Image 1 (tube, one colour):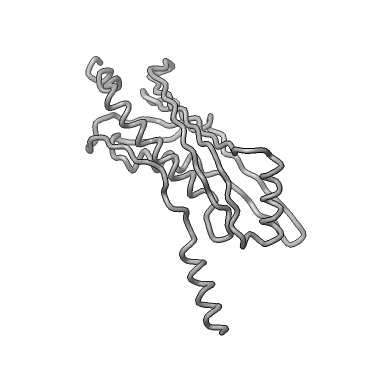
Image 2 (cartoon, one colour):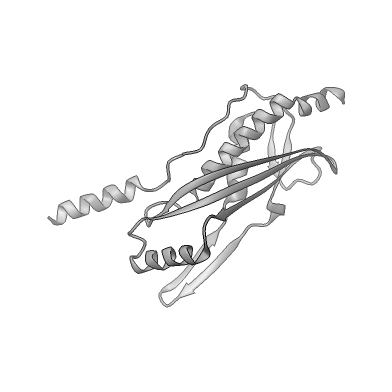
Length: 193
């Protein structure tokens, strides 16, 4: 019986590390077409929090800037992708936020129930992700794009709490690349200079 319990616990621990990707992926043509860009995500602000209790402290560091950087680099559309380089000719300014749907009292109740069960009971949450992408040349804004994704997620001890955010960002970056490819604005700017 003990072996069965240990086996089930290990299966849950290994299988629940990341949330599945439920967001749509957008198509764009492969190949490096654009010069290097610099990204500025959420005005360079990285949200962090430190929570201390009776038995120790936990630190939360928002990974949004790294998710955006990784998503842009994974597309292989740019010669180089940097972050927070003010001297780059082309910049992409990204504003990303997550808003919870529904009343705060319900969210608080879910959080308290999760704390009482030590987060072993999965709690469903609904979020709206909104991304704003602005292409800049020097100090001039060339174009603005806005994207929105809705998500239903489970808060659970064995699920990484930022994995759904990572999938939402990757979907928005794919959508952004498809849009700049169809607009042909960035390519036209490069051939004009």
